[in-house]
Length: 499
Ligand code: ADP
Ligand code: ADP
Ligand code: MG
Image (tube, rainbow, N blue to C red; front, side):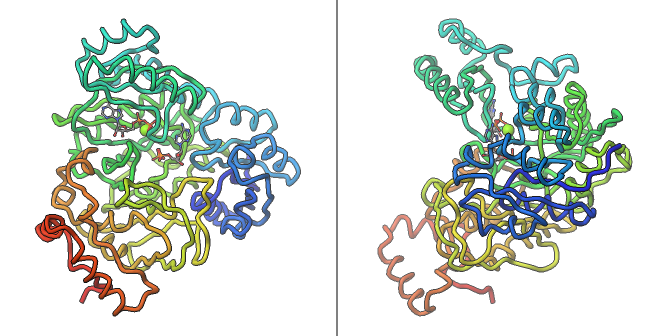
C-alpha cells in the first residue's frame, strides 16, 4: 500500500480535466503538463501546478517522457496518469516511470508490451480458448505464402498492422489480384506509423458489431468485468457513437463475453482499467480483436450504468488497494450513450475542420454529461486529436438516453467550425439505430452528406439565415432535394428551436 498524494497527468484536453477532477475529489494534488500550443488550455488552469514541457508538436512535449518524469521529481509527484493516446500504451515509458520510483497508473510494462502487439496478444490468450477471427497467427513475410493463406481463409480479408491502433494500419483486400500491392502498402504504412512493419491476415467479417468489455483488475489477483460497450458506429474504423449496454446482447452472451474478457486480462496479469475488444458477427459469434491497456475514450458510458468512477478505481488500484466489490455485486442500471464531438466535417468525409470556436455553449440538464476541454473563443489546435468534447447522456432505458441525446445535441451551440453534432442527430433518428439493427457499416449503408440537418450559423441574423437556406435549397439538384425529403430521419430544416 502506498498512498498517492500528488498526480501528474501526462495528457491534455478533456481527459486531463476528467482525471484531475477525480483526483481533487480524492484530496490528491494535481500537476498539469502542457505544450506551447496549450498555454491557455483549461487543464492548465484547473491543475494545482502546471509546467510547460515543450513545443506544440506532441513529440516535443506530450511525448517527452524524460522531461515529464523530471517534472515529477522536481515537484514531488508520486504518480503519473497517462490518460489515453500519447504515452498511455508506451511500455518503455511505464518502465521508466517505475524505475524513477514513481507509480504508473496503469498495468505493468509487461502487460502493455504484450497487448500492444495484436499478434503477441492472440498468442498469449490462446491458452484460454478465446474465440479468434480466422487468419494468421504469426506475422506474414512471404507474399506467396500469404496469398495462399488468404485464399484459404477466403476473400475478403484484412491485412492488419500488429502494432496498429486508432483505426490505422488496416487494409481490406477483396480479391487475390490486389493482395500483393495491398500487402506492400500495409507494411510500409505500418512501418512509418508504428515503427513496426509486422502485418498479419484476418478474415474480413462482413457485418460485424464492435462490442468491447471493460475490465478492472487489482494487485491482489481480482479481476472483474464492467459489462459491455457497443461501439459499432464508426468512420475510418474509429468510433463516433458508443453505448452501454448493447442493444443486442442477451444476459447469457454478456456473461460469456465477460468471462472471456476476464480471461484475456488474466493472461497478462492485468492490473487497473482495460478494455477487451471483440467483433460480433451476424450469428452472434464473437471474436477477440485486441486489448487496450488504458482508460478508453468511451469509458463514461460504463460509469453511467455502473455508478463507478473508473479513474477513482484506477487510482485506488494503483495505491495497492483491493477492489471493494466482486463480480456479483455489479449491476447494470439504465442506459448511456456517448457522441464524440469532433472538429470534423461529416459532409466532407469526416475530415478535420480546425478553427476557432466562435460560439460554444454546452447543453445541460438531467442525464446530460459533457466532458470537454474548450471554452468559447478558443482555437482547436492543429497538432492533436480533433475531438472537442464527449457528449454523454443517461436514461432509465435506451429510448430515454436517445431522447436526451437528441435534445442535448439541439441545445449544443458550436459555430466557427463543422462538427459531428448533426451527424449524431442523423444517427439517433435513423430507424436502423433506433431499432438496434446496425453494424460497423452503418455509415456506408445509410449515410450520405445531403441527409444532414445542419443548424444555421448561431451568430447570423435569423432572416438572413432563412434566406440563405431558401437559396441553397433552390440550388440543390432536384434529386438531392427529393431524397432529403423522403428521408424519414430529417426533421424540419433551419429551425433553431423545436416548438
Ligand atoms: P478508444 O480505443 O479509446 O475508443 P481510439 O481508438 O479512438 O479510442 O483512440 C484513442 C486515442 O488514442 C486517440 O487519440 C487515438 O489517436 C490514440 N491512439 C490509439 N491507439 C494508438 C496507437 N497505437 N498509436 C497512436 N495513437 C493511438
Ligand atoms: P485498432 O487497434 O485500430 O483499434 P482493431 O483491431 O481494434 O484496431 O479494429 C478497429 C475496427 O476495425 C473494428 O472496430 C472494426 O470496425 C474493424 N475491424 C477490425 N478487424 C476486423 C475484421 N477482422 N473484420 C471486419 N472488421 C474489422
Ligand atoms: Mg481497437
